[in-house]
Amino acid sequence: MGTPAIKHAADSLAAGVKAGAKEAKKLSESVKNQAKNLVNSKTISQRGMSHVFEGHVTGVPKKGTSIFNKNINVKELIRDTLTDSGSKISINTGNRSGFVFEKRYAQIIGYTGNKELHTLRVVIDEKGELVTAFPVKEYAK
Image (cartoon, rainbow, N blue to C red; front, side, top):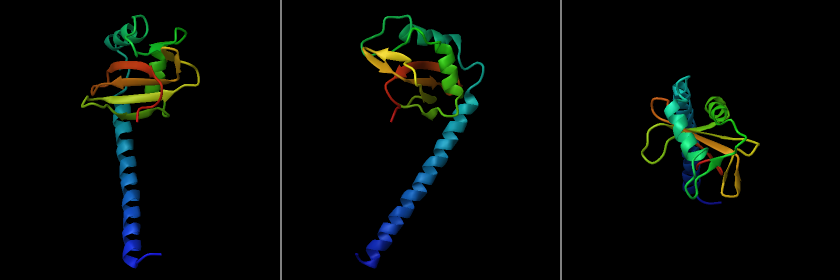
């Protein structure tokens, strides 16, 4: 079965992985709480909604850009994603400040080309204001 030293090393590695997972979960909860605390009645600003509508509702989308389903109330979908306890929350990527909220819906909320999209990604800045929101294929990794 291996030497006691190998077993000890394997046990230590397993304990380290378990401890790391606990710390990652704590960090995740901390990020979620910080992001949730930023969401308020001013989050969905006119400036943010204008950006969303111009790029993903009424404007002509750039190649590869998703658009919302015409039968969707975009503002309500954004509000739901920001306030639902089941939404996935993470720190924004690419050295950009703020947070990303994502939620998967049963209904089709948008399209990229012919592909049906069910997940909404909402980005808020460090002050809690809407930066953008758009349908995506799946959760960010």
